[in-house]
Amino acid sequence: LRVGIVAPAQTLTSAWREVLPRLYLAALSALLVSIAIAWWLASTITRPIAEITRASEEIAGGNYDPVLSLPETTDEVGRLSKAFTTMAREVARSHRTMRDLLANVSHDLRTPLTSIGGFAGALVDGTASGPDAAREAGEGHRGRGAAADRQRLAAPPDRRHLRPDPRAPVR
Image (cartoon, rainbow, N blue to C red; front, top):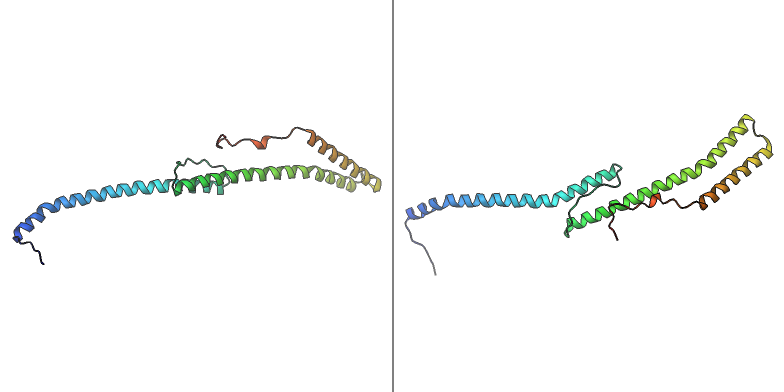
């Protein structure tokens, strides 16, 4: 079975000439609309990723508490945003803890080192000499250390490091 259309060649050519400008206009309109939709879709995906990239560069630069203004979505980009925010908060908390520990250790080491330096200076310049002076200096240092420990333990706890994060959710 064969089906064919029989028409004069002039009619088909003139029909195509009438329809072709409209087809070009429709194709151009569809192309422009698809470009606009693709641009919007790409920007909704890349904007949060660019924000996360900027925040990670801030963290690498030493700002461990970057401000993120990411939309709440449930897609992969939204989950990535939420995970990054949580990670940034934990890195900031860890950095604060490390900084506090180093400050406390350096403070606790400063007193004995100052005492040792003073005693070494006394030995060098002759102010302290002999085993009795050494024993006396050692006992005085131990007594000061014990008194400082008792004073520190009796004082109310320092709660400066327990400041709440203003961005943390209220529970």
